[in-house]
Length: 186
Image (cartoon, rainbow, N blue to C red):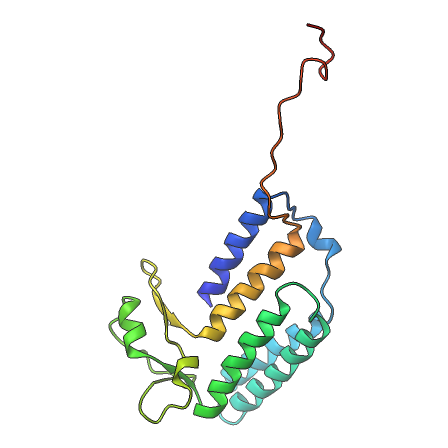
């Protein structure tokens, strides 16, 4: 999820430029962070052990993420996160893996598809192919194809971070103090 990381770095920079501060994050705690830890653990254990543990880990992880998102739904960006996770889960459940567009890979500057159990090339049998990895992200040395769900997740994560840092959306415009404010008389 390189796109999510890139968007979050840009969101943090924008928040800091518009008056946000890292200390503001301490005042904006999210509910149920243990559900995110459980989701990460389920994904990790399922990936490492393989076999039946992999789909069970994915299902458990999705359930934990759903609980976390539900607990924080009123926070800025969380509805986008929920929509993105739902779109990704739907296309994976319907196809058994995330479908990847060969054309999107090509436009992102990638010549080949790396086969893994979590991804498959889109084909005529693919259900809802437009929810798969169809969005090319053409970054030097870091090209990839992402799904519309990934784009929503990145936008939601960026908005959540921006709001948590206290960004105002306006660049501070500090004017120079007048001579009178400095205690000087003309």
